[in-house]
Amino acid sequence: MAVSLKPLSEQTIVVTGGSSGIGLATAQMAVDRGAKVVLAARNGEALDEIVVGINNRGGKAIAIEVDIADEDAAERIADRAMEAFGGFDTWVNNAAVALYARLEQVSIAEHRQVFDVGYFGLVQGSLEAVRHLKTKGGAIINIGSVLSDRAIPIQGAYSAMKHAVRGFTDALRMELENEGAHISVTLIKPNGMDTPYPEHARNKMGKPARIPPMVYDPRLVAKAICFAAENPKRSLTVGGGGLLVSALPNLMPRSADKGMEALIDEKAQTTDTPPAPGTNDNLFSEKADGRIDSNQDLNVRRSSLYLEAQMRPLTTAAIVGGAAAAAAGAFMMARKRRHNSAMQAALTANEVRGGEREEEAHPS
Image 1: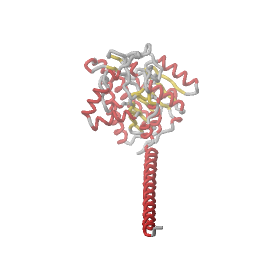
Image 2: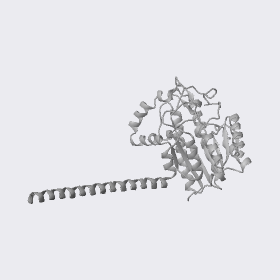
Image 3: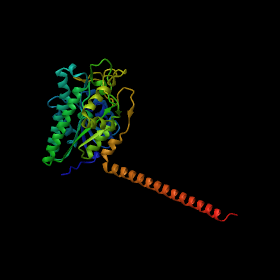
Image 4: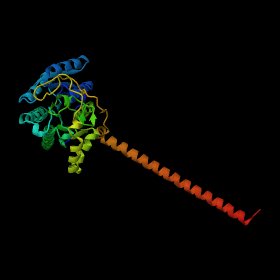
């Protein structure tokens, strides 16, 4: 049974991890399109500033200071949404923490914290959303990663967590579909994004961390999320570079391993630009927040044709088909012109030869 979703302008959207990066970009874009927003994160001070800014320009937003790893976090967020707006229509599980370190350097406590926030926080949020949306319908949007499909060195714990996010999301979608629930479940898989992620991550390398190229504008992920809030989609990958990361391992897994070892090594994940003051290492506690973009000077891609193609496959197919038809037509016209030119040249040559023979038969 097809799931029907409300226009964004009629929705209330919950966004976890809403104090920076993708979460903040999503909140701002959703508000600009008329949605009401509930922002959840650990940094209450940053959230308050964001909410004041949104409301001052005519939007409707509220905040709740909460650690998504706490067992009652999702319930508290849902209760806040009910108090302020009478409920919610879309729940976006975006909160995560990370670290840059070889797996032998990662303690069990650090590894567990990555999962407590990025996986178990997402599970808790998804199940709370299901309880509220089963009777009215809506959308659950989970933020995975291209690392949900492909692990990379130095970010092993984060890669493992995002693999788990994909597995849970796929299973939840199937179970809800099987029972006929009117809930859309979407997995968004961003490529590397220009967010404060490397500044916030715990870093055990010798230099400041960075996102390896290709790097995209986080507002593209916000665009994908807002689209999925209105249009049921199984998954969306943000950034054509992510297609290579996700698809290549399935085709040539051993070659992909070697490629990652050579290209996404520690050198590719470090920079000379230090984290902004107060932002470094939010693994176990919040740090300075409130920015969408990183503080690094990167070659950031502002568009993704691959994302556009996924969001509008019929339009893309029509454009591609039209372009192919036009190309075929142009080829046939060029071929016809070449044929006509060749025929004309042949006729002209025959006429010349005929004239020469006539002159030889009747010399002056």
